[in-house]
Length: 215
Image (tube, rainbow, N blue to C red; front, side, top):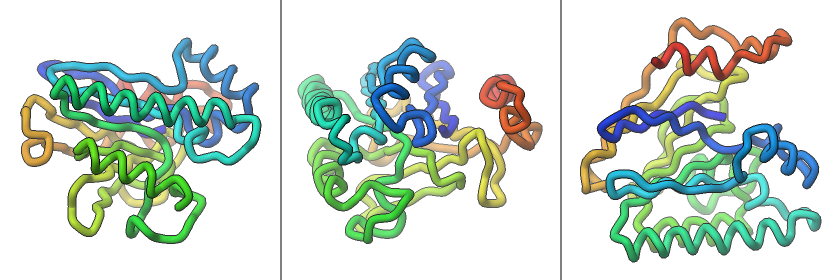
């Protein structure tokens, strides 16, 4: 999971939703929703923006046990996009997996949406003018762009480990502007006091440590 923060006249933490180690069958999906007392996909609005949080694990899977859940989430996602468009809201989407790393038509990989669903996802993103996609999974901090620069994929290292030189950190977004295509600003803040995830040492305090440093 990657830690992100949006600035909308006040700070709001927006952690990316369930990760690939959180959910892998229906029993772990149920456990996740119970542990965090939340749905695995949700949305909220603020200052003319709609934030849509998705469970990319179930969206991209082809496992039979998730068939009904996957179909419902895709339908729900499109409904949220349509509702936001009718309300004139700007849209920001967050989930765990990267849609792609190099190009929209690249081969499948462990890190990304498989091509069998990637095209559908990107079509919806473009149709409803989504300019900002927040993800984790890659254990790196970087931005990814399609060839035409229509949207930005913001990748943030999670709370387990990082594979690049950027360490742990938080992306701050200022979404006070009405022009999401041109005027939303973003800044990566390296949390120098966080050097590892204590949960790897048997101490369940990794995420709280990061949020404590961000206050």
